Image (cartoon, rainbow, N blue to C red):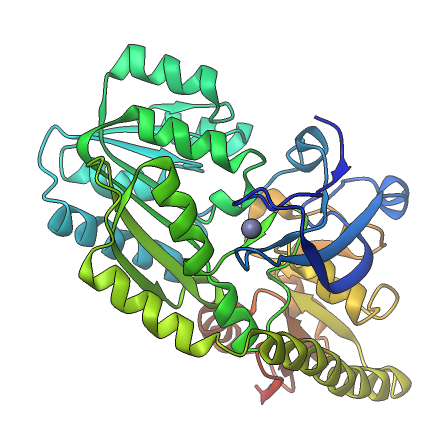
Length: 413
Ligand SMILES: [Zn+2]
């Protein structure tokens, strides 16, 4: 597949789309290269969000080719953040209870990463199967004894999984479906693989929370869709699912959890219907909400820029904490390319690489103790509580910690 403009709604196929926000050309956030010269030349691609006028779904206006997006530099590991670990552990308990899963049941995780989620089902003696296109995390999962297919989840792999493992009792997926190029095909394959009355539960970023809380850094090339429940439910029912329950949680700045059942009834259960009504009340003034969100982004970025420019004039050393994919858009929006001395990371796979389109090198966290910066900007702000604990433990002195989102916060350590 080549990079291309997206001209139709990915959920209802309407071509009636309107532009919501345009971030211009932005480098791919996970393209962390080891070579400074190559990093400076990293390619940029359009980053813009559209909304479907028919079903109200939000999505990107440009899709970067999978082979470019998920090349060898893909370094995300779900095992790294402690909060996410806890979330997945609780999620497994919730699934087992709500879907009456038992010992020996088959659990499939689409986009299973390093197998963190599946490990909690494995502990309860279930048969776990992972599938993920990223090479390194798949290898780590297999090394831990979690059977993981290192490939994209498509017609071919779905048929292969069914022929090897048979029908699946429970299918799960976390923060993956917004990355999927052909969502319709993926959902049909999930439906095909599930046993009758089997459950499919997934979590995706909740765009309503993004807008309400003035985030914007969940928008990046890998995320093709920005979901809220209403358009998704119409889409899932068309595939054939009944919708059992919809809920939200605080993961990644606000996520939507949807539990579906393959019972061929296309029903909307009471709890799901109640959620939809509530969402509809919050989004009734859709256009006002979108406009407010766009103007808030500009205001908060200006406020951060004032602090950074002042510190720059005072020759203060500014560095970043965390190099998640979203850091690329914050760096571009704040124009930090020449203002950051370096970024520190906890993920060993990212260390000694460069932020795309820049000379900003990613270094080990211990660098903070050696180099004593004046200001740290936390790009991985959703793990902020873990990070501040670590910084305090490191006994760093006279350090200003700046958390840019969701609302600018400053701390002195
Ligand atoms: Zn649509």
